[in-house]
Length: 412
Ligand code: PMT
Image (cartoon, rainbow, N blue to C red; front, side, top):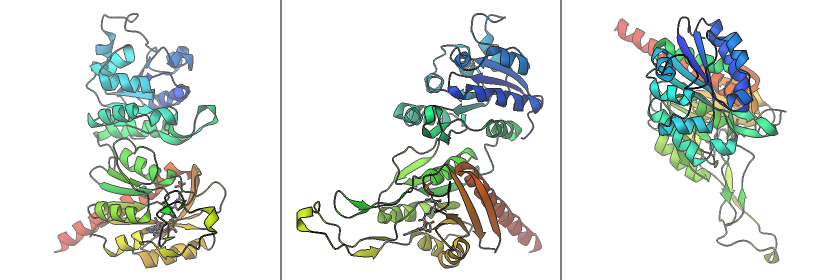
């Protein structure tokens, strides 16, 4: 974690089940040498005790505008802070902050401060994807508020999906990175295009050929790149909002994805083809629903556009193209063939027949083949961590190319 030593950090905690993780965030910031002032909402204390923070933080936890020492605690807290972090941030706090409503000490402090603010959302998927929450997050991101997460994974009540609080480690890292130089991350200024989800190839107006892609791996790349400061465009077949700060292009068929990719990729610094694109489609989809009484239809298939190969053959100078390989056998050999044939800089290969990896799982395990001959085995971990590891390789490659160009200029 980039040092937070000596920094005054207001740690806001609002009333979600993930409030217990704020204790670990507090501990990590304290271990990093920060001066941490907890501010709890009333809802937070339904999940985690005030005494816990009193024992861990630099100062006792605060809760109310009215029972604190001094007439205007929120302006004092906000003015003296080097950073205000809210983890978890509920839909209520996000909405109040976006609307400028100070209904308690935490929201009043958010509005009073001029320090960097880091919002770490945590809520159920349905809430995270509600248009009001999507708009509020976009409003805050547009004002320069740093949004960390949420991630996809297990939620309270046994559900799974987007809305899980980022890990305390990630939150503390991001706070350190923001305080270190304010740079939102090592991909600031980069344009990143990510494809996600499985395409649907019509048989008739009702039926289609599809696959089991959930889009989780593609969205994990989009979230990770956005979190590291990139300008992200998601070309997605999935009915799920783009991550905070990212732009969405909705498609359905391979043809539509090919058109969108051709339109978006040309100006991109990085392209990540995580979508499961059909290789074949019905050559002549029926105009009306096929009827059982007309007998079993003979469906002739034809190839779809090979988007990755097309991008690889027209890659602008400096662009890094990351393709995937979904294999069920001979993973390394099939991935090597794709790396050779498609013109990608990296192929991220996953055994989609393996347990806990590939389609629809929250985790993945990949073998990354690089065009320079290097290979990187990334063991089973969350799809967000897979995305982080692959983007670490991409950033390192971009930096190496920049240094090589600088070196050659010096020699001229
Ligand atoms: O979405 P999830 O549920 O999280 O699952 C993740 C994933 C398994 C879908 C993902 O990790 C993955 O493997 N994505 C690629 C799936 C795929 O189409 O692999 P492929 O080996 O068939 O294609 C190889 C590459 O060519 C891929 O980058 C693909 O996007 C691309 N492609 C494929 C066909 C086509 N007509 N055009 C393409 O560009």
